Amino acid sequence: MAPVIAPVRTSPDHPSSTTVVVIGGGIIGLTAALTLAERGIPVVVLEKGRIAGEQSSRNLGWIRKMGREKLDVPLSLASDRLWTEMPQRVGADVGYRQAGIMYIARTEAEMAVHQAWTRSVDGLSLDSRLLSASEVDHLVPGGEGRWAGGIYTASDGRAEPTLASSAIASAAIARGAVIVEDCAVRVLSLSAGKVSGVVTERGEIRCEHVLLAGGLWSRRFLGNLGVSLPTLPLVASVLRTAAMEGPTEIAVGAPDFSFRKRQDGGFTITQRGALYAPLMLDHLLIGRRYLSTLRAQWKNVRISLGRAFLNDISLARRWNASAVSPFERVRTMDPPVNEALNAEAMRNLVKAWPVFKNAVVTQAWAGMIDVTPDSLPVISPVAKVPGLTVASGFSGHGFGTSPAAGQLAADLVCGQTPIVDPSPYRLERL
Ligand SMILES: Cc1cc2nc3c(=O)[nH]c(=O)nc-3n(C[C@H](O)[C@H](O)[C@H](O)COP(=O)(O)OP(=O)(O)OC[C@H]3O[C@@H](n4cnc5c(N)ncnc54)[C@H](O)[C@@H]3O)c2cc1C
Image (cartoon, rainbow, N blue to C red):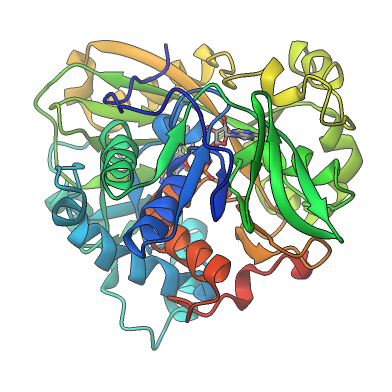
């Protein structure tokens, strides 16, 4: 069962014109809409299913700088500032806590990866530091694992995915944004080659700009326009426990499990060392672009061929404004939970921190992630379609950077000074 987000009073229908249409009511589209509404720019968010019904409610809630590409660190630093201000900005507690994040290593080879990352971000003044095995034991007591050491960033943290998107959506609505659920955008309207509106399943909206924040659907939407956005789907399964005494407030990522404390007193747990890829047509079409990542991660990848392939090929890759689009056929992507991976995560965790043998599992879910070949998102104008900007491909770590990523997308839409240098995120790099 997927996580349920706090309710939002969305609009029953959309107006016939606005300045900006945002396609997708995930956390990226919503933070962009909040930023635009705060700037007094009329904005309409169209969501084919439910606000944050896909990745944005299903993620682990980690907010980290640690482990990011050097190029991606400025976006995460800007996001930390915005997360800190978020409760005041949206008038609600979104569960943001700088409780720290730790990665632990079982082998010297894994430690070497952390050391190399620390060197790669030298000069950025991050508070990440390498840990000895005894420092790991001290920071996360009660463990029985044998660790080579770890890496720890005290200023990293977490927020609650089920609170954040709805609080951001409600704040955007309070500032004048219109948000409509169950309303898929089928195609763009173009005049003289430029964006002049969108056609939804309920009719047309005229607008000057469109921001495509459609998560894993953005590739299909752009494909229909003849624009290639290389993203591949991966599925992660997650479980949560009832409230319990745990070893720490720090979110801990080991090679084959992770856990983080939740605001409700339970823990969110996953098998961090396994990338599950239910084979789809795109894996065959663009999979070779991921070969270098695959080589490094090969032992962590679990590929399966099954129903997902058939579901995927039954969805259209080309359609027009009068046809029911793939977005109406799949209101919410709700992949099946990989019970075996969840059981593996729990077993590995209990071995390392036996206190978790008392954990009562109360919920399990899965989420489908849109991954680019270099694991950086695309936040970029689409040169081929003037008036269209895309913000997608967050590769499994877009919740943490969403406040600044959404703002950057809004900056690009309105031609304002960008919150960070947008060049690492341009579409043309791919
Ligand atoms: C299990 C899991 C764990 C994760 N853990 C973390 C983590 O700990 N930290 C972190 O930073 N990130 C994490 N992530 C990644 C993070 O959740 C995503 O990067 C982020 O939520 C992406 O937000 P989004 O708005 O781009 O996409 P989404 O939340 O997927 O939203 C896109 C929305 O667009 C809508 N849409 C698409 N096409 C159309 C259309 N044509 N018309 C109307 N609506 C449309 C979809 O219905 C969807 O609701 C995790 C993801 C998963 C699945």
